Length: 60
Image: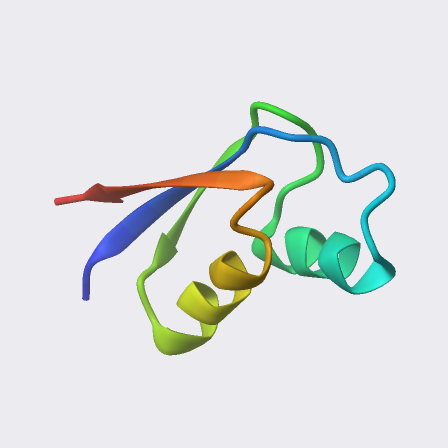
């Protein structure tokens, strides 16, 4: 399965509680933090919900 790197680039302040929980579920707590995940349907769905707060990069 492909891997993706998810990096938080914007603050979660003034975001709805659901988006804050999604960032927490992805393992992101502060700006600039990077986490690696498998590119599964559930992870891609979570990334899609907070796409304005994160950047995504595919790895090999």
